[in-house]
Image 1 (cartoon, rainbow, N blue to C red):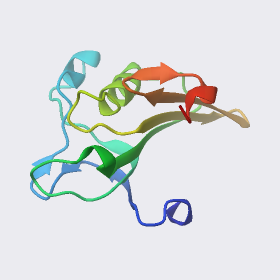
Image 2: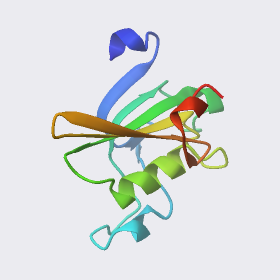
Image 3: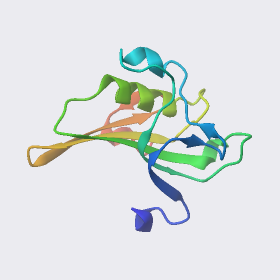
Length: 123
């Protein structure tokens, strides 16, 4: 992926918000019985590293959640809604849910805190 996003930092299984804090999304604990905190771990992110003061709007480009032959996970959907919320802390420009299985993949895109149709990605 690095060749597709020159100048951006790409991380897998990322769980930090700046150098000293865990990545958290307020309200994510409520999406599943097993969750005990709002701490999260994203599958893939494309962003610019930021300082502890928090990201600027243009620092967070893409957040991706992946599943293997599984229906859409309610917690992953909620994470993508919160990550792309323009009023939230992270303000990722796009969120992408990818399900790989049975020799095909499906994808669901998120922008401005909501699921969008593919033809709205450039809007």
